[in-house]
Image (tube, rainbow, N blue to C red; front, side, top):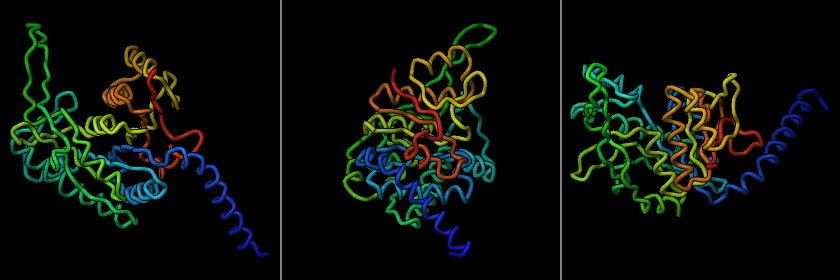
Length: 302
């Protein structure tokens, strides 16, 4: 046997070993709903975007019901700059006036949504792109924030414009997808009581959808390895009580706090577990779901 044949045999044996390891997890997850929030570097990198599409198709082929909810902050910012529309942020939320919300909807529900659906279709899936306004999937209410004046110590209500949060999820729309081989790709845009358009944080939208569908997993693709302890080491698994304590003592801080809170809300509302995954790692979804050690931080209810 030649060296080339030896290498091919070794490669084949390695692939068979991987499939053997993954099989029990495939059986365990078959028939379950997984809500995946897609964003960050994973969405901006062409190679990673292609791998993500392939992974989503694989999940569907092994009997999992994937629901993709995507963000698009950088793309929105780029379009606003091109149109010379200024915007600002409060607590990580983009202040969204009437002109801005039109751009947000155009970018999220138009360009990005259809690009992701097309990539999944090119990978052999059957993806349908929609926004939270389609079929009244996401009914939204206006987000309200308060800010305390440092001089007078008086709290004032901040108007963030057309920034919303999920009020209710019409699960019938997603149940129809579940009974088919179609993969929903959802832009986090919601409709208010009067039909007005609301821009919703993608993590928040994904968490609300996961809870409404009683999903097995909520997976948030991020640009960090996961939750780190005080020594900077990755925590592979934690309970809600531990997560809350780490927020309280300052170990978890900054932009990780709202992601953790989204995970906590989801598991408290019936989702089995929520996972924060490094979307910069190729096949991060498959590593998390089909290997013993996973690829991020899994959070369960206490």
